[in-house]
Length: 332
Image (cartoon, rainbow, N blue to C red):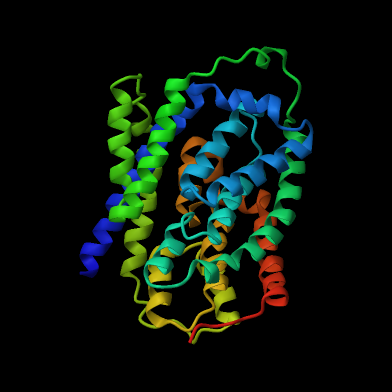
């Protein structure tokens, strides 16, 4: 059964990453990212607002989709000049938004399926809000030093391709519906992509571009499940805090599975740790791998750590903010 579950996860991730690569192209072609150029505030504040928007999207959409949509908007409004620290922040924002929502992240959905209430998981939002205020401000100013959102006359008369928007909506709806009904969002995504291909051009050449990053993530997930982690330490806020750092290098899906089986955690803290903690390194979350397929410069781990240092700081501070605000309340 474990092997069957592992293959299911790997197939689903493959479908998600390839499917969302096509979604990203549809979204880019729709003209909507260009429209955001007029909507977002100018200066560093625009970068911060975009991160808030990404986090908000991730509360009800998969964090991979949120990261890709945010990445496409950033690519357009910053004219392709996106700071690595800001890329780290896009990943972190998508993971922060998903951490407190049972719809926004695979790990929280797993908890929900196993009987953890959505309310318990939602305590992670206290950490997410604190974190985004820290890394969001810093990353937005990092980005502003490289490229700001500026007034662009060419962006005033933007044509929106409503067919492309319809396909994006169809793909997202397919993901949510398939996740809700059969626990396999990739199927819904690909049904939607095929339907969309019947009435609008589909850029199938996006799939080969995503192969390298997808194979890398699948290798990480597969190797993580083979690691001899028989027992985790006794659940406490200290060990949960440590799991955030583990999550940056050890895939959080099998890690969460082990924690659920063990029990005795404060699920809000666990959701924040394994969800947001993976943002500290680009390959620590599926959202990170998906975004780095779009922005290869994010795949330099040293550069990511150097420029995205604020993610780790935000995690540490936010975790202790959670302790102060809601306290550690483990499940029975």
